[in-house]
Amino acid sequence: MTETAEKAVKCMLAMQRYPWEQGVCAQALYEAGRDDLFIPMAYDAVKRQNADGRLAMLGGGSAVSDPASNGEVCLRAYERTGDETLLNAARRMLGYLKNAAPRTPDGIICHNLKTHHEGFSPFQLWIDGMYMVPPFLACMGKTDWASEQIRGYIRHLYDKESGVFFHIVDCLDGRFVRRKRWATGNGWALMGLVRVIDAARKQGNTCVQEEMTAFLNRLLKAVMRYQMPDGRFHDILDDETSFADGTSAMMAAAAIYRGIYTGCVPRAFEPAAERAYRTVKNKVDAAGFVREVCGCPDFQSEGTSAEAQAAFVMADAWREKLQAPAV
Image (cartoon, rainbow, N blue to C red):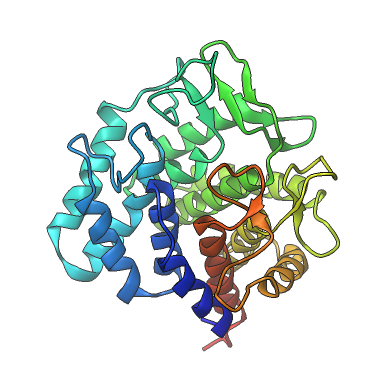
């Protein structure tokens, strides 16, 4: 881990976190090999587990898909410690998704229990969810179910014209809640895909691996058409008046570095990841905040966020693995 990433980690750990933020931050630390940090975060996600099985439910009462982002770290923490409390927590999270989570009419797990947008039903898909649910299903051995969920996101949110995803759709009537080609949303999708592919590869599910690899590279190629010269993206990919965003750039870079390392992304994408990484690394300030990113709490203006910190840590970790000398 580079000195800059260490600084970003310390800052990240000081930030308040909702369920998806706890999940992506813990996942970043797991991927960076920081057992000393991700395991305590997994335990705390269990401490905040709802009776219905949703993990890390501090301040996220309506969240359905976001809590699942904590699932893999609970599983991996169990593998490190042997503590069955962690395994049982992951199984309870899986049980919630299987038995209680609301679904769209065609069976795709909804993002929330209620709508946060007046005039729409709760039966919504947010592209963010492609990172939250399918990777957890896949790491629990449910790669076919994970791929079924991804196909649902593609049916409902994928824009064939541009080759990238829109943000939010109401699946009850097909109206878009947010018909924006949000850069961070597409970053979530890229990172989710590469994790599902990796799980399918490890489990020998060649069909899912090949299908999702083909789509990942198709999406990656489309997203990269919007890349700015410095490696970042506009917050809304096709809106040059929107601010430059480093979160999506780090999400894309993390997916590229990991994809090259695991064999599902061509090496030709590496220069694009390098441009992004070098630019965003220079945006980490003295306190460790990754600056010039899509900011919390509304994620519609520039600011800071836990997910930006996590994405930078992930990109740094996979870049380091990729560039390590062969043993």
